[in-house]
Structures are given as C-alpha cells and as structure tokens.
Image: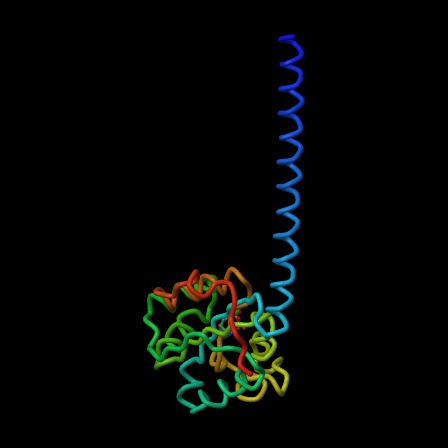
Length: 196
Ligand code: IDP
Ligand code: MG
C-alpha cells in the first residue's frame, strides 16, 4: 500500500516536471518569436543595431575651412552624428592616440601637427560605419587616395592629410573613450535612429 502511494507520488512528480519543461520550452519559443518580430519591425523603421566610429577633422582641415564640407559628406551619406566637439588636442592625448607609430621617423612631426590647432571630434553611428567611413576618408598617403574620397579630394603628400577615422571596432571603442571620456555607451547602446 505504502509502495503504491510512493509510486503514484513519483508519477505525479514526473508529470509535473514534464509539464513544467513543456511550459518553459513554450515560453522560450514565444519569446524568441516576439524578439524576431520586434527586430524585423525595428529594421523596417530604419533603426539598426549599429557601430560607432571616431572621426577627427585634423588641424589642416580646420585651417582650410573644410569642416562644413566634410560634415556634409557624412550627412549626405545618411550617417548619424551622435557627438561633436571642437578642441585642441593635448600633446599627451596625441602621443597616446598615435602610440603605435611612436618608433617612426615622422612621429614628432605628427604630434606637432596634431597639436598645432583645434580639431573637430565626431562620433558617427550606423551599420558598418567603421568601414564605410574609412572608405570615404581614403588612403593614408595622398598619392594613393582616390579622387572622390576626402583625402583624395583635399590632401597633398606629407603628414597632413585632413582627417582621421578609426580603423577597427577595438580602435573605435578606445578612441571614443579617449576623446569623449564622459561618453555613456550604455545610454545609447542598443539602437540609433537614422536621419530621414
Ligand atoms: P591612417 O590615418 O590612414 O589610419 P596611420 O598609418 O594610422 O594612417 O597613420 C596615422 C597618421 O600618421 C596618418 O594619417 C598621417 O597623418 C601620418 N603618417 C602615416 N604615415 C606617414 C608617413 O609615411 N609619413 C608622414 N606621415 C605619416
Ligand atoms: Mg590609423
């Protein structure tokens, strides 16, 4: 009799366990479907999972009154500007920013150039924005920069080449944090609305 009761109790527990597992699976499926639909809706509305990149209009770009024309290119492309700042770079920040070039013969000249006057810092956001902006910026050396790119249209041979743009996700994160130390990535992390 006692054995029978234990058996019934065991079967009941097993059934409850099965029902609980089925309910969990069912809710997981529903949540997955809802998230899928939500993401589809977001894409349709022009809101994307996005990347960010740091752009610097260098001192020669500012001196040559190219700020407006450069920003216009990014706006016309449809990229969102999420941060913007006008300031002169300190020597310490310039050395940190170009630390990977510290052994090169042109390093001191590069630091003098980057600290020679105010620059414009921009954070641009959008899908694949890092690669898109690098393509818009063009090759480092003026002789290689294709016409139609910013450097191709405005830069001549030498250290001065108008503009900087992050070249990878890691670089973008480091550079945004370097020049916008109060930047709150969490605040705007998930989505950004593109300009119409
Ligand atoms: P990037 O700006 O296209 O990413 P990097 O190789 O990271 O190119 O170089 C950083 C900056 O250092 C360049 O934008 C340019 O101002 C300067 N630079 C790079 N290579 C040379 C060079 O061979 N001679 C003089 N200046 C250079
Ligand atoms: Mg670089």
